[in-house]
Image (cartoon, rainbow, N blue to C red; front, side):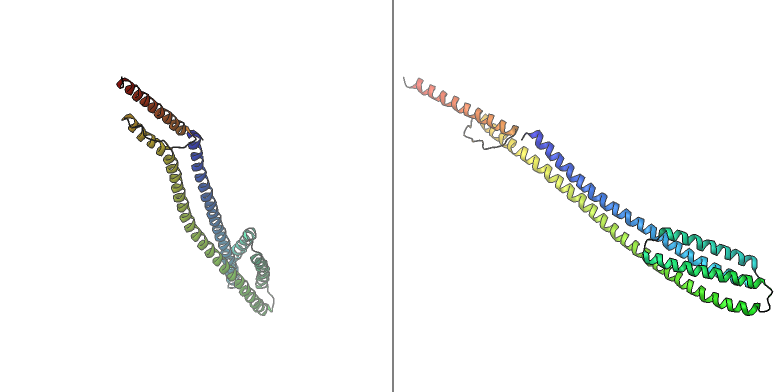
Amino acid sequence: MKIQNKLILSFLAIVCLFLIAGLMITANVMQMTALESQVSKEYAINKEAVRYDEGARQLQVGVYLYLQGNTEMGNQLITEGRQQMASSRENLNGLLTDQGMISDLGEISGLETKVSGISDNIITISDSSQSNRAALLNQRLATLQARIEALNLRLSNLVDRTNNDLLSAIQTSKQNGEKTVLLTLGVIMATFVLALFIAWFIARQLTRPIRRLTEIADKVSLGNLEHDITIDSDDEIGDLSESFRRMINAFKMMDAMSRESEEGEVRP
């Protein structure tokens, strides 16, 4: 194999090493990005669950303010609470993928409908002039209190679960981030070491026979022809070694012929 081909192959090997390292790092970064996206999603779910709970409490406070005579503030809180619950419920329907949480949201939505219905009924009775208005209000308020407690309990459980899911996602993302950094550094170091080894090996394969030929050439130039060239290579260095062998053999033949000629001249 020619030296040029060896250099090309070694270059391709180094490129492949860096390509593999790049793919490994990219895969880890993509995994980390996916986990960060999951954290963002869990944060959004938790935020909407909290807003849903806040909307329910606004509705509850609005009803009680209305009954106490603060109808303007009561109506405002009731309207805002309903709008906030409706908005959060819609957003959660688009965010949730866990079937258990989706089922819980459906039950919460049913409780929300019941709370809204009894709230409207209480306001209607409050605005009426029925003789038994106070008794009806007490009855409806007791019903509202029970339904609100049930709604608040389910919403509190939903918020707690989304909090736990968010904390778990953050912890997983943090651990994965640390692993990704360590793995990335390890891959970079391993790739660098392997690339250096390949470069050193190829350089050694090329320079060692050249250095050996240089030493022999120096000795031959001083007249020492008793050297055997044992370099066996199928590249240009091998061709150079063969040329050195022929050159040394030619010097040996010329030296032998010179000695025979000198001996012939001395004999007469």
